[in-house]
Image (spheres, rainbow over the protein chains, first blue to last red):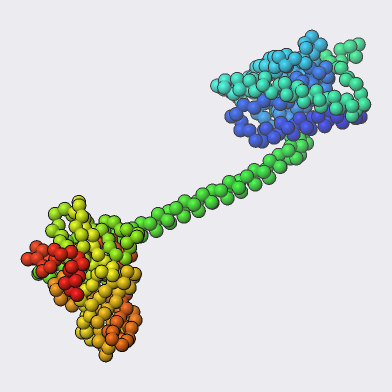
Length: 172
Length: 291
């Protein structure tokens, strides 16, 4: 149990470090894959719904701390993404690349839509007046493109974690 | 019951927490929580970001180095261009000085000067002749003296030996073995004949054995035979060869005209002023006339 908690904590830190590099290097005006969202979707689709929700919630809060969204907005959206992908995991063949890309596409679309709605409700003064459609389309496209690689890496990481923690796949 | 709906329960908890954070986002407690989160998260990014920072600094230094190198190259190129301009300017000034000095040649009433350029030079015939071009209308004749300007003084280069098509002519240089010219030592007035040696030296021959010619003496044309006016620079004595039995004293001369650096010359034509005796017999003949 302790090892499993440690593994989740390490996963959280590694995910955040990876995202930090992109936050640091890539200019705000350029679209980049939303690595944490993809990781949450991948963890959820691997049947780890609780881990996906928990990691999504705290990764989302981290993004809220460094981003412009209200504290809690992305936390809730990523937790929702983890819950949704975990719920769909048994109904979909998430081993297929097309499914992974469809999940990334739909997840990103809903995530962006949800973020804009939450901003509109909770931060009416900070909401974007003009939607940067190029940025939105770029992010959706890049997420779909990067999804198979992220799903593959996350599954390898989870398999390694299972061996290290000495547990089987704890389907939540 | 809890186990069956664990996922839903957790999601409800996260949703509730999120909504609470969003609803009380301006509350002091939520703000403190946010700052605490920020404080805890900040070190996590350092291991990933600091190598990038270091790499960024390194790349910045490399970029500055390349920029400095490019600036140095540009400066060098500019410096070379300026040097080239200076060289060109110096050449033009030198040419201007020579041409200006050549205007003074009009002081000989029996001769007409025609400016000309060295047109071609044969590597196999380097110390023998050059091809000059004075233009189609210049009345150049065989035997005309070819002069140049050295340090604003007129020096003899040779004689026209052959007329060629398109306004060109072959000039036999003083250094050719068939070339000869009457000359005298300025300091003593002694006369002799300057002969070519087929190399970059001349020989002043037929000096008496008691001649007082010395190294450094200036040799000028004596004007005999009217091939050239008197007083034109021929060369300077480099060494004196003492007379041996049955021979004359001789002086080795350095030609005054820089034969390796000939560009502009003046052809001194006597034809327009009434012709020169023996001029039509060729340069060798003209030289022979002087002999």
